[in-house]
Image (cartoon, rainbow, N blue to C red; front, side, top):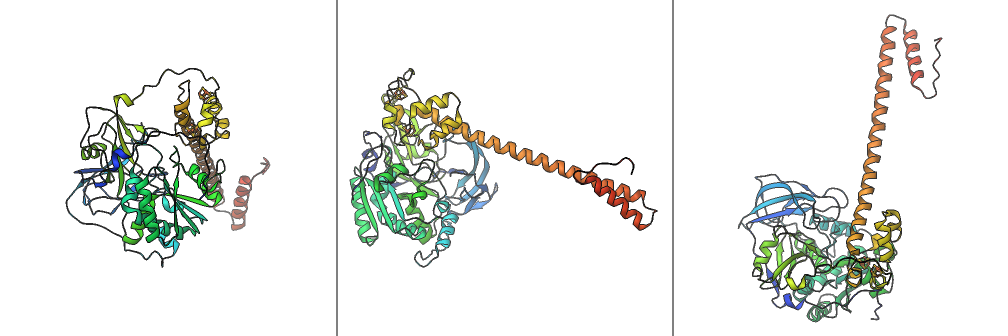
Length: 501
Ligand code: SF4
Ligand code: SF4
């Protein structure tokens, strides 16, 4: 297959091998889980259990609120200790409700009935993915059922992991490529896709071999395995589509605009298990790696397990441990401590050593070298975006494509003036979203005010009618009717009161 290139990107030193040697390992169930009700793009789920309730493994504990939301399930049998807000690791300073569970050794499990994926209607399959709480496991966390609701021509299974240390998809493919291929066929059936491409980075040789064998034996040739170059950020949705098809997703648009859908390989497997085995999404593979952990590995982690617990599963911290990241070195979030629970979107815990932590050098003025634009995989002009963002020109920043910035960090890495471009774009996007939310709040407040005014006027008119009717109480019926008519006339628009009446 002839591959195309995406603009920009960087070749980074690979580190997947540090964690893949031990295969997939089961993470022991911790005594307590903190299951977040916001593990997806969109609105938080609403808790449907209360303190003291006993729950079964796989039981729903959070109900999706609105279109872009997802159900949340208990990864264990146990008891609800609390339903309360806790800080979010991904969004410093923000909180969301978590269901805290005391885990028990009881094997009670709640499963949905298995379905025949080939005989079931796509609508029923969609409903199953919704009921299983499926979200994209590549990191974005968009509810899967919502993404699958529109027909597509091409399904891309994304096994091209973006960042150098993250190896959860590599590890998953090595052991469960059969399920990924089956899941791909299931998803393709749901969206009516005539073609399925399973894209894997060429450096992931074992995963590639496993996928090719699975495509041969499980896919009946329906799934094509494609080795793509190991260039960061190859796993970006738009970049991968461009490499595979030569087509560009239009600025401000979505892959569905060109008839494509991209799903992470772990999502495909989770969909397969949800449909054919009735399993809700209650665990995921997490890479725990870096020179700061004793035995790096890839663990199947119950959702809600703390970072501290998974690091302990990997042998604990080494003396070299200096910085804790949730995610990879390019797009990860630095954590101030390890008491955060892992959710459906969390694919990696990385512990760097002191020599890998480079303090940012003092920022210098932009010299307009254009290196950032050359490296940008979204074909943006970061130096111009920076200018608009710093000047507070939010509309212009939006016009110039700030929402197409995937926050990959390539521009930061190449900037000779050490300008924190990515952070600026992240803040700009947040400012635009907050302003849109404020506008929405202001509109809603005005609407409420207008409704109140209308109600007060209506009640005032009714009082006037009653008053007129009482005054005319002893008058004949036609006199009462005339009084009411005069009252109504006074309420009507354009009424010109005549003092003579
Ligand atoms: S790389 Fe840095 S110095 Fe060069 S144009 Fe971009 S922002 Fe300016
Ligand atoms: S962070 Fe945004 S602007 Fe910078 S290179 Fe990546 S996509 Fe382009």
